[in-house]
Length: 224
Length: 115
Image (cartoon, rainbow over all chains, first blue to last red; front, side):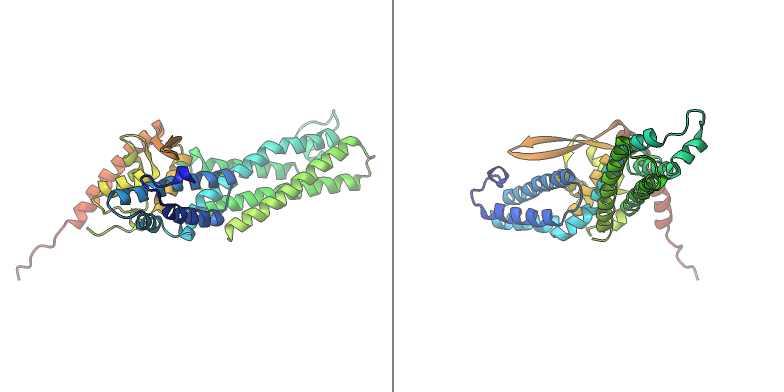
């Protein structure tokens, strides 16, 4: 903690007060780990600055640290003020993950259940893989949420954290329904067991676990 | 001077933060101090208002940040992006119109009664 010691002091008591404050804040922040770490690093610097300003104004280090902490607000208030940005960060990261890994799951089902070569078009694809409409809805919801929580929000209506979490939960639920549907269709089809089917089912089961975790986290962040 | 409540600034905080960052990069605490000193103490905004608002502006692409190590502490400094400069210009024009209209109405005094 030496590098975080308030400049101009050798007393560790003010550092301990700041460390205790940040420790309590750490316990209250919820969201992506790296984002939380960045917030804490930034606030640690700000608190140090605030304390140094008061020491320069003549306060003893202990009172300077206490005044800096009072200026920043209670850990609960600060954590609540960051909850929206952390929720948006969680939603954007999770949705990006679903978009990136979606094809890695879908490709196995496509290889396994692709329509006959002489049947082309969207109707043939939906007949072979009935969850295609769900995928399209999920992709549209993902695109809309990413667009209205990122740089495009300068031109589009901004999505608030609560709606971003709702969108994330809905996307995870659509993936969950899609994966369960595909596994059920395959198991009821009476198709002969193939290694490709095992890979497709394993990929879907992995995403089911991930979708359930996402729904749990997103709901927890909406109702802390 | 009475400190202003943060909710009074709703809709104007983005422009204020962009204006504070216009002269050059600043870290979060310096932004809070610049708002306070630049308004003669009227805009003494809480940390919980300013830091998340800076993060939101960065998400919107109006500001960007860089990390530096100063005096052994990691420090995040924010600066305006070209989009932020453009947005600040637009918001200044909107504020000029708005403040002129509001001042015209609020500054109006009833005529003294002649009865």
